[in-house]
Amino acid sequence: MPEIELSETLLIDKPAGMTSHDVVDQVRRIYKTRRVGHAGTLDPFATGLLIVAIGKATKDIQRFVGLDKEYIATARLGATSDTYDLTGQITQNSQPVTRDSGVTSNELQVTGDDVVKALMSFKGGYAQKAPAYSAKKVHGQKLYEMARRGEDVEHLRPIKNVDISEIELIDYKWPDVTFRIICSSGTYIRSLAHDLGEKLGCGAYLTALRRTRIGEYKIEDAKRLNELHVTRNI
Image 1 (cartoon, rainbow, N blue to C red):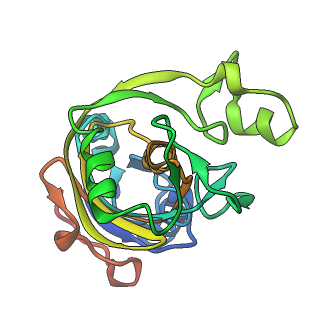
Image 2 (tube, rainbow, N blue to C red; image 1 turned 180 degrees about the horizontal axis):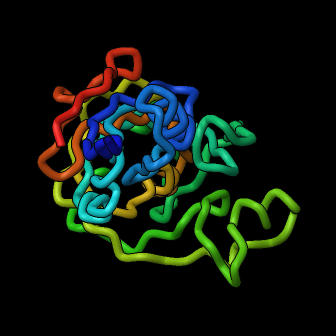
């Protein structure tokens, strides 16, 4: 009697330190099948909701890709990173940076009101530039591969109009800003952190990221990898 093919969609709470592909590999081992895919990559340092499809369910996985996402993010002010996150080369801003208004910015001058105003300036969306260290392909090559070879990719970074329907400050205590955001698919939160630092005039990079929702699917309904088990609901 032929084996019945699995067809299942999983909501997984990805831990920090794993790539999305690492999660797929573990699911393959648990379910003993190669036919596994995921919708919406999370960076290794990020945690949170990852949708994984098994077997026949992989045919419909694209329907999850374009859904809006919700994140809780933390940005550190007063420094920048070449990758826009904590994994890159960090450069501290030892001297105050001049804002467009001519006012210098430091930890005393970046108030909570400043942060709220800067965050709210992104609401509705804006033209966002992809990070130099991203998987975006230009002329058949990934940007991060070219950047790591020392090539100048600044002029190659694609710009995309992203939609930000909600953004709110959760906590601010210099130098860390924690905020919640609901945004369109394809939004780079680390680019947003970098752009926030530029608006505040002090620089910033992303130190933590947790995806809490994809469309109607919530992190509260997700399982950790050690909680997975094979079911036969076809």
